Length: 388
Image (cartoon, rainbow, N blue to C red; front, top):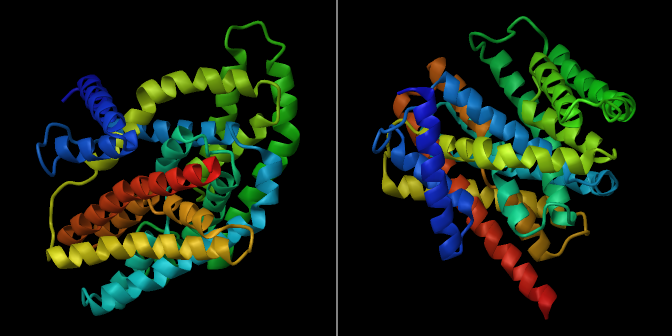
């Protein structure tokens, strides 16, 4: 099917499913994820995801994270930096060891497969959570800022852990000869580099582009910064969405922030973000379930391990209530692009079978659907508490 027809169909089902969800009182993102599964290759097979659609979808993720950065407050990010690191660390360790045990003793898989399970379920995707936080104007409060900031630390943990795994098990297509120290050093260097650029170059660059007479020069200049950062991130093995978020935070401290945010949000939320959300469901190519009880246990473990791990990481800092911790934990439940990539690496290198790959994607998608629903529940509870 032609890429333009695919986009037209995706936008239509995103519009319908999103509207239906809003009318029945659940986050629109849930309907768009489910719609992707329905029209994808696992069920109706109307649309298959390909390289062109995947690229289009990835632009949606980058735009979403860039706007989240634009709406952030740097002083708040600094304030919640330590709690966010606790959320990321504990929120990664609990599902990591939980899924190693689950894979070894329930699924009877090898240690290699079990570690891969642990890595991909330790990762989180804030890009799915952003939509729900925005619906409740919670993106820039302490819980929203903590979730977004923890994503930076989570990305570092996930990339480093994956690098160790790929090196130890000699997976083809990876830098097998490169030491772990070099890999980690490259990623640390990138964050130092992007910090310097964000602090000294971006503010100066925005002053220059703000003086240009070309229409939309501020928007064009901002996206030049984003794409340079995203391109650099891929070279150093860092997630492109984290690079986009950091650029957004840097530009949020300049006077062009409001203009760039308003102009970016129109094409992002009308085209790119809906395509991304539906495309998550399209990643599921078949419905393989070894046992319905095992599936229920796996999805429950995926949700509970993140809610408990991330929530505990927040609560132990003594800066958050139990409901705050539940909100933060729920916000880290969705797994997204990084988990899908890890699963694909495992499938491509025959670490996991095609059936196991399908089973993993089912768990990822179901937990990604449940995450926003839980987040909505705890946000509503917070709102009711504040109104009393």
